[in-house]
Image (cartoon, rainbow, N blue to C red):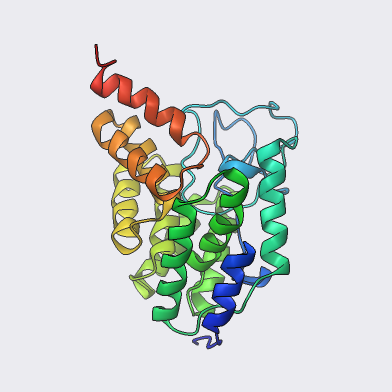
Length: 272
């Protein structure tokens, strides 16, 4: 059953000028996939930490290990446990509050959604700092989640629930159903990539990320996932290219600049 809702373009312009995202809280799911380390504890969804890296139970270390091989690529939104606030974290929280208070209805047509995303991507690429980028990125993520189908929306939520419960076989079946029903839904492929990655199947994760990026080339979470997968597979040049594109789309994506600089030295040397 398809959902039909109006999306006045005047509200889009107003939302962008005011710095607020566009989609109501009912459609919002922000955050990132869980981080699975040694697997000694089951994942417990209990809040959300900014920056896309999610912890599990409350007795896990206060700081998650950094580096492309120590965390799950931020392939898809999922709730997690909050971390102590930082300046960037507070800015992200403020951006999400703006998203809830200044949201406009979802787009009525694919063309309206495309125009909204293109405008938001342009503003995000030109943002001056992390704080100004937060509400733009939040609005973009919510537009990614707009499928226009009640069935797909339910399946997307069930994938996240299954991942949180570590029922990855079920999550795989649900994600496969999503991409079969809506092969043009980029976030469905992104979520399929998450499940494959958590299963240790980097080949299918890479294939799903490629499909997601073919549909949504500026999908910064998929670009981050692609960069990390390629680096894990030893293809540093491809990882560097993905990070370069990621920084063009979202200049303040957490960890991207450091990873890019490190890879650039490894691939291109110090220029001496």
